[in-house]
Image (cartoon, rainbow, N blue to C red; front, side, top):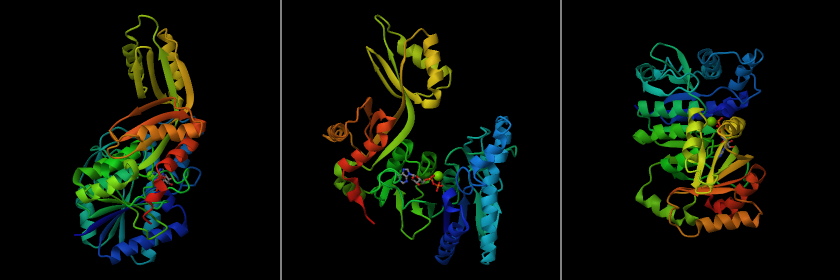
Length: 409
Ligand code: ADP
Ligand code: MG
C-alpha cells in the first residue's frame, strides 16, 4: 500500500475557498494512486470562531478555572470540527472517507495533559479504513491515554500527529501543507525576499525549528527522523513542490558546501529577558546558587554564560519578574534587560569556518545594532539583541549572507 500523509494547518482550512484547495490536493493525491491519511488542525487563528484559542477563551470569562484534563477535552474539539467539516466536503464530491479522533486513530500518549507525548500508535483501525479505499481524516493535535482520557500534544501538535502517523504507517512521504512556499531562509513575514529552500536535512530543520522557525514543530521532525520518512513542507495555495526535509546524501553535501558559508537560514525568538548577576568579591558559588534556584522554581534558562565577574542568561519575558524576585531573595543584585530577542544564524557545519562570526558582527555593526551576548555551536551562532532591533538584525544578516540568492523557484 502506498500511503501518503497530508497535513493541513489552521490557515489552510480556515475558509470555504481554502478548503477547496485542500480538496484539490486530496484529489491529486488520490489520482496519483495513494492511500491518503489527512491530518487537520483547528480552523483559523485566534479570534476565528472555531480556532483553539477561541475555544479556550470560553473559559477565560470564568477566570480560566479549568483543570488540564478538562482543558484537553475543550481543545480537542477544534480539530474534530475541522475534520468533520472536511469530511462533509469530501462526501459532496463523492470521495469516501472516515473521520477518526486521535484516540480512535490509535494514538496513545502519556498522561501529561496539554503537552502529552505519543507513546505508541496502534494503526490497525486506520489501515482497515485505508484498505476499504477510504480517505482517513484524523483530527490532529490529540491522542488518548491507555485509560481512554483525551490528551493534546502541545504547540505544533498536528505536525507531530502527521509525522508520527507517517512513521507508524510506513508512509512514502508526509506533506505538511501551510501558508508559505516551504522552509524559507528566514520568516517571510520579516524578510520580504526570503527564499524557499529546495532541500534541508532533518538536523538543519530541527535547528531552524528549535531556534524559532515556527513553520514545523521540532518534535515532529525528530519523530520523522527515526525512520527517515521524508517530509515535504509546501503551500496549500500552489503546486510548488516546497521543501524536502530528508537525510543528506554525499552529493547534497557538495551542493551544501557551495552555499555561502554554509548558512541555511536566519531565525528569531522574541520576548526574552537577559538576566545578569554580577559576582561580588570572593563569591565563588553564585552560579550554583542561581541555577539551582531557577531549576527549583521551574524557570527554564537559556543562553548561559559564566565568567569570573558574574553570570548572564536569558528567561522568557513572562518569567522575568519571578526570576528577579527569587534572585533578590538570595541577596543577589540582578540586572534585567527585558524585551530582548535571540537571533540565530543556522547552518550545517559553520564551526571552524573562518569569518562567519566576523560577518555577523559586521552586518550588525553596520546597522548600529548592539550585541548584548553571543554564543555558538557547530551549527548555530546566536546573538542577543534588543527586541526593537530584532527585525533589523534578521534582515541585515539575511542580506549579509546573500540568502535570497538561494532561490530555486
Ligand atoms: P500552520 O497553520 O499551517 O501550522 P504555522 O503558522 O504553524 O502554519 O507555520 C507557518 C508560518 O511559519 C508561516 O506563515 C511563516 O510566517 C512562519 N515561519 C517562520 N519562520 C519560517 C521559515 N524559516 N520558513 C517558512 N515559514 C516560516
Ligand atoms: Mg503550525
